[in-house]
Amino acid sequence: MAFETQNPATGEIIARFDNMSDAQVEAALTASMAAHNTLKTWLLGKRRAAMHRIADILDDEAERLGAIITLEMGKTLQSAIAEVKKCALGCRYYADNAAVMMADEPVQATAARTFKRYLPLGPIMVVMPWNYPLWQVYRFVGPALMAGNTGLLKHASNVPQCALSVEDVVRRAGFPDGALQNIFVTTDQVGEMLRDDRVKAATLTGSERAGASVASICGAEIKPTVLELGGSDAFIVMPSADIDKAVSTAVTARTQNCGQSCIAGKRFILHGDIYDEFKAKLKAAFEGLKVGDPNDPSTDIGPLVTERARQEIIGQVEAALKDGAARVTGAEPIDGPGFFYRPGILENVPKTSKAYYEEIFGPVAILFKVDSIEAAIELANDSPFGLGSSIFTQDLSEQDLAINGIEAGATFVNSMTASHPALPFGGVKRSGYGRELAVEGLRAFCNVKTVSIS
Ligand code: NAP
Image (cartoon, rainbow, N blue to C red; front, side):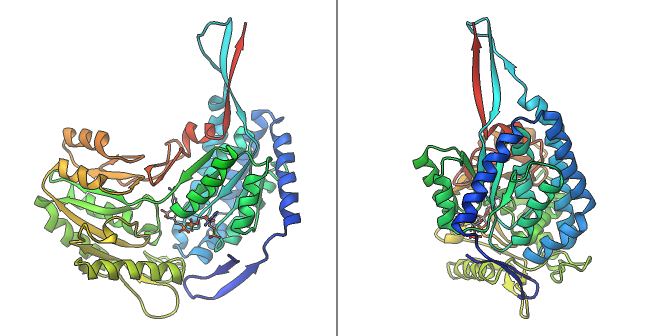
């Protein structure tokens, strides 16, 4: 695909970027290897100082970088600035904690001295999506560079200026040239790079189709992968919950980032005793949301990312309605320039409908009614995905049943699923495998070397 900036709020094409030639790809691979060879000789204190400089630049330039995010993918400027600041937080977390995460770990075995040592792998292929165009990348940059790895960033083709900004910030912070390089390449070139001996592993966040493609090449090449794929997270509400809090959290969970979040609550599984109250309050809240110019501070929701994304959601909703679902409110495109879409709610989606199982990557909530915690968990698990999940209940036994019973990489009790640098992030089932963030994210691309000294 062509790398270009198109403003989703207007549809205007702002800039186009040329794909790299094979010779440029070769140079990038060489530079990535050279940067790794330099970085692995740096003491952790030196890496820490450079990572702190990344965080400082991000904080200092949050408004400028936030404006690029908003221009390229349409989220509100306020949320874009918050994303940049979260990137700074993530970089500081790894700057300050990597030394402990990378420290030798003594183990009692048979030799006089045995321990585990964490060593970097080398250049990593980093394939990223547009929905959190900086956070997705910095959550790789923080742990990877602190461990001594380097990154070749193949970002989504609609966020090229975000991609270039990361390379620029990492270089200005003082990391070796080539430590994080943006590469404008085709899918075929990605495949060739994955087969190159210098690339040691890959991480991909995106669709199942892209994940399966990258992982199959890496499988054939015997290279490790981390896959962060889609989700259709359950958001369970039981009668003992604080309903107003559950409703306001549901609104944020389903509509933030214009509903384009992998860990958004997407399936709202409500106990029959509170179904009508929750539905009425959610409907009123959805109808009160202001959709419009993402640069206007009073806007709650900007446009969807592309016309193609909007058409996909229109198609999913139409199919669900045809299959017997009912529209509670909204869930329709807004006329005029830009890719705007009114947030909406569906109910009575039958099990025979594709919408029951698919991820809807936009601001459409689907409501389900159940009569027990067991039925809620069973419905939560009746999905190919297993990324995040939430349950609202004051009942400790229901909390415990959900924590143990829901097949997902995370269960948040009385709050929405959210990422944090200190918490492992990832999924099970078709949501992928491996973990980002926390110590797991750093060690995902380390050689855990066993050392035994007799
Ligand atoms: P996508 O089409 O898979 O794109 C993601 C990245 O993969 C882009 O850089 C894309 O490049 C690239 N790509 C596409 N096909 C490829 C292939 N065959 N080989 C190599 N690279 C390929 O994903 P999307 O639909 O834009 O993003 C939304 C999806 O990402 C949703 O399913 C969402 O849930 C998921 N997501 C998951 C997480 C998580 O942490 N689990 C976080 C955010 C998003 P082009 O742009 O050039 O096509």
